[in-house]
Length: 133
Image (cartoon, rainbow, N blue to C red):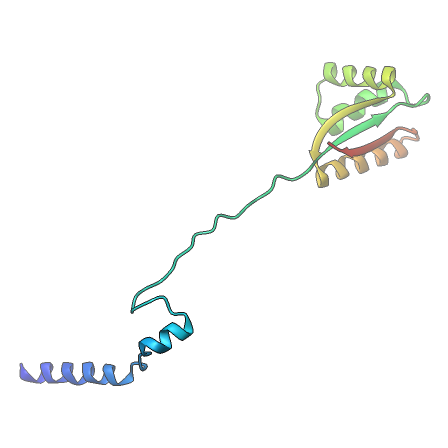
């Protein structure tokens, strides 16, 4: 029973010998240490996230692209029902320009590219552009 206590004291004494030397009060003030042992300053920062910019995807009117093709494009790439697609197509026809949707930059860029490629593939001069909202 005495043996385990002795080995405990040896370990404890050993641990004290290996501890780094403490700074004197004068050294602490010079180094800017805040205080005694166990003193710490904890700051919690909340990340500031910013909403991404939005872009309007617009179709431009021309005199050659059939209205039915424009309706098909709006249904296919902007996932509008037949009625909404027809309403947008008529707005483009009467006003020269019409908004198909509002998206983040990457999505808007993809939609514009898809519409332009599809129109070119079907030999129509339909133009699709994007602008910052």
